[in-house]
Image 1 (cartoon, rainbow, N blue to C red):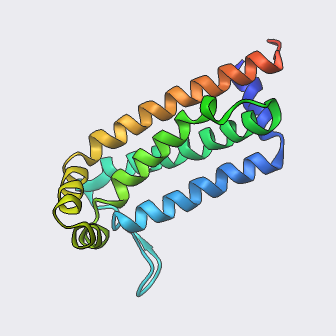
Image 2 (image 1 turned 60 degrees about the vertical axis):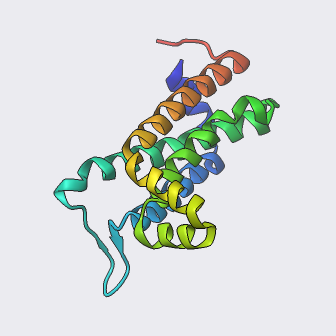
Length: 162
């Protein structure tokens, strides 16, 4: 049933392109903010051995974000679902992106200097709990994926073929 629902959604080039665009955009942003991706003096993707887990989590979060967002938009546009029903995927995306973006040095410094002690506390929290926050966002995105597939399969009455 899952395969048929994915085939139904991604047979439309618009949703496939949207998923790829979200993945690439979030991946470039989070990789740059986490200092895995460098644009100067040359384009370079470098992942130190000690940061492999963080990099893998970034790839998982960005992949699931693209997939779940496309499924959610399909449900809203094609099936008439409410944004509230499809919103849990956006929550996972926001948590995953903020865990990666706010913990890096340059953005963390801007947040801390702009918001003072509250910004410093938030940056310290996000830096300390970056991996658990990404794991939580992955769990939210997997749940949102399950709900989206279930909703699409139920509303489109996809029949199981052999």
